Length: 156
Image 1 (cartoon, rainbow, N blue to C red):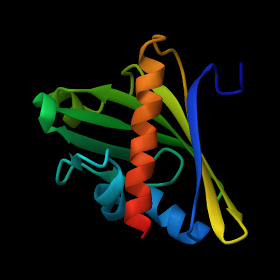
Image 2 (image 1 turned 45 degrees about the horizontal axis):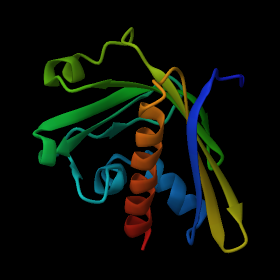
Image 3 (image 1 turned 30 degrees about the horizontal axis):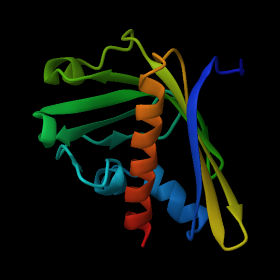
């Protein structure tokens, strides 16, 4: 058990990028819309928001065309330490009306994204905390690995 609760999974990787560019990629809505999705998918246009201050909102919709639905994620920043750490809640729905309402009381996980500038690269770690059924954690982890592939494409 961590200070954030039970760790569901984490993914970490180094990118040939400055920490400033990495921070921008994770906090700027236009940048997020360009990469925050699996490599074979895209964000729902206009669905991405990011106000990276404690209490600020973030959101994104992913067009899962292959399976005929849209996946919506949203939440609020709980920690913002520029160039070092972002933490936010993360709720999920497939209903556009629920996404539009963005209920602060909806079930949520906690996501922590950590950054560290290293020699010539920036290390990033994405950790999700909360209860995930055992069969879902490996799929969620693989999904974030694919998001990181998309991030790498965006940064180059």
